[in-house]
Length: 346
Ligand code: KG4
Ligand code: ZN
Picture 1 (tube, rainbow, N blue to C red):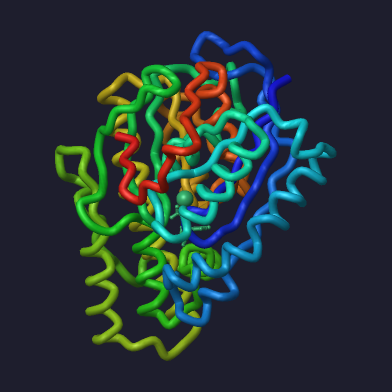
Picture 2 (picture 1 turned 180 degrees about the vertical axis):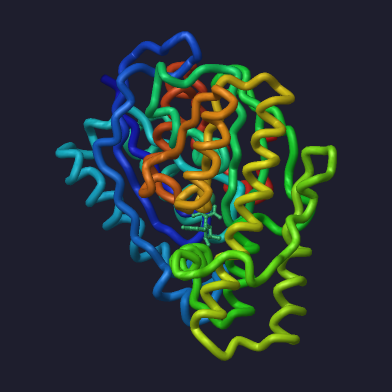
């Protein structure tokens, strides 16, 4: 059984994981028997809370003392030594250049010293691949809705490894909208989980924010108008009570979820998708998971979402994405791999 040691440092999580799989793939190209043996994440959230956002230089420095202990823990949890792995995989972009470099240089060094093949993985493919653990249940073609702090896009998957852009945000990503609106509301970082938590106590109907681009007959998305609406609303009605804050959070979350669900369903219908794969940090949002699941069910489309722990940045998803590249022997010379902050999957 091949084993991959995967590394992820593209933004503010230092992560390593051991992923196992069988030496053959299913009809869609997903390796059989995918199994996450360990997934260790050292989060920098407490550091970035102070600045209510990620300062790239601070993030990169914080990866350095964590990278080796995190790799050690991932191997220990998987009950294996570094000599037992068959290959290395690393998230090589997109992301913050100096953060990516920490993981990429660690992976290159291990690859050269251990003489094991190295697979550079696209971080967006990794988010999508968190769903590949569902294996044979995934029916193609599929539409992936990738929603993170840096990305918001719908992607058509005709075959595993073959990705085509359907639509993307013209401005802010959905996670970025959550984070920026949280900042306007004087909430902590990252904004998504807090807005989502407060939204549970909020009431619907008191406040209305726009659903940008929702009724436009195209696949584009946009979230900066929502942020501006919240800004003007707060100027007019400063928050004086907790309930008011909860109601705002409820409406912000509903607006974002409504737009995402509508665009994902539009893409699925347009491309006759048999499955919808939800991916990225915002995929951890309970309201989005529920709403997209119901909408997909109504259209008889299979719906897949990663385990909550595999939604925000982690290395297991990097190993899951690398598994099909491993079987296709898509190895790169470690001496020539570079962190690529602008690497576009589609
Ligand atoms: O995928 P990720 O960990 O990093 C990037 O690749 O960007 O996504 C982080 C984003 C942040 O913007 C965060 O606010 C958002 O995911 N997020 C959520 C939730 N958990 C994380 N947004 C809404 N609801 C959540 N529960
Ligand atoms: Zn990510």
